[in-house]
Image (tube, rainbow over all chains, first blue to last red):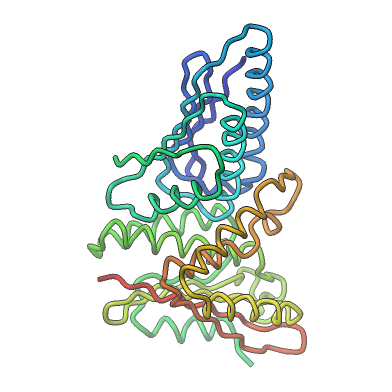
Length: 134
Length: 190
């Protein structure tokens, strides 16, 4: 499956979704001018990846571990909605017994970012988010 | 009747550390907040405090960008580039984030109700409201949808949480159709 790379902009995060290398990461600051448009690329890719995982399990009897990493320094309230969309998609996969993990990184003095991760976690049914202090 | 430019000049006479009057489009906001963040670092504020102020300012300015009425402001002031005002000022152990923009009078009842609810809510309930609002918004993916429809209310709740609910608003009637809306968020800095 073709990976998705989005370079970090002044107001948009860096996105690496690379199944071959096993890297799934969103990092940096997120307040893109059109968050809906920006995250539609990510969500569309993840939806295709989900279909790929279904196929892989059914046809190859194989499941791969997915470790999704968030290393966000800042995100605005509009981005929060799309980050939750991503987490809910991953949560759905976990609910279907796929080995998905989420690591939420935050800088030590940034209690708000830790709290934001914990609040996201409260909306999830299956995933446990690992809080990692940088 | 209030004139946005005169109000800006009135505020600027106070202890302003950053002030701006003009357009509020995305790329300009990016420049403003970048410059503001640098100024706050010069003041020697903690990273955590700067981050909170940054968050509040971004939400406040993006609100103007989404809901401001630049044409009405232009008609009022006789100038084309007065979409909103933005100011940071010191007062003892607090920093005040003040923004202002023209609003349509028809939105006042809903806006006032939203603010009253947010200010009166207990903090724990406010957090629940944030999560609930976010969960409602999540899943409504429409790339063509305006940003204003995708994050309604979350920004105001976020500002309230980050300021320990020290968030106030003032509505100054201009004429039968528009008012000048002032948002003031008080942030503890020590």
